[in-house]
Image (cartoon, rainbow over all chains, first blue to last red):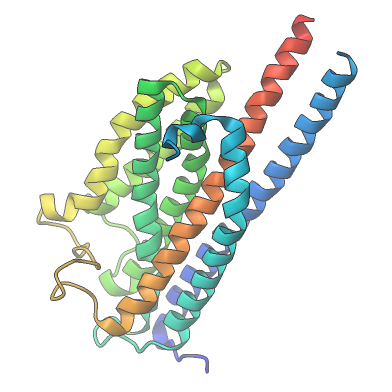
Amino acid sequence: MTPDLGKYAVSVLSSYGVSIALIVVLVAWSVMRARRVRSALERIETRVRRNG
Amino acid sequence: MASVWEYANPVKFIRTTDRVMPWLWAGSAICLVVGLVWGFFFTPDDFRQGSTVKIIYLHVPSALMAINAWLMMLVASLIWIVRRHHVSALAARAAAPVGAVMTVIALATGAFWGQPIWGTWWVWDPRLTSFLILFLFYLGYIALWSAIEDDDSAADLTSILCLVGSVFALLSRYAVNFWNQGLHQGASLSLDKEENVADVFYFPLLVCIAGFVLLFIALVFLRTQTEIRARRTRVLLARERQG
């Protein structure tokens, strides 16, 4: 199942490792920031409505 | 028929993108998993480049998205300059970090590929150099947005920077054609079948490209929603401070 990468194993695996890690970090960062900003806005909108 | 300018309304934009985003996330995940597993496990080695050819499934899609993200920012910036729609300026802002990460992936995978094949991690080849400059433009663009407090002024200045940077986005695409020198090969994908990579690499590569495109769109939609909400938060806080 696992391909024999031969003498290029380090190059190929490093490429996949770095790329997948960067994509995961980018998606996680975007999702976490989206949640944080959304809840901050809801808090402020609730306060604004309460204070008229 | 609905006009595309309806989506310049932030509420309409958020409502519509909320509906399509689950499909985009699912589509990108499926395409990326299928394309990368297919490419990594089920394609043969290249007769010249050995197993390093497997890097193509990350290098080509990320390089493609690095350039196209900037071109998308260019279109959004032009819409801002001409029509003053905030959503388009915020979409350009939202796309920049995604494009920057795509550029880093393209540069990193290129270095990992170049080391065993060219015998060097880096060379001041026209395409590599223009790609590095494109990355610096991404950093400058992101920094400029953060450095200016007034959103409209930031959008104006970053739009101009985006217009200037577009020269390098196009150069990084066509550098190989403009200057017939350097180590980097020509385009891997072409309408001319003779110039294309072999079919056994081509089809998983297309699936990976589809995955990267869908991921980019999903991320830009999510991050644009975030920028719209962040802008609304700043406006409300400013109103509160004024009493």
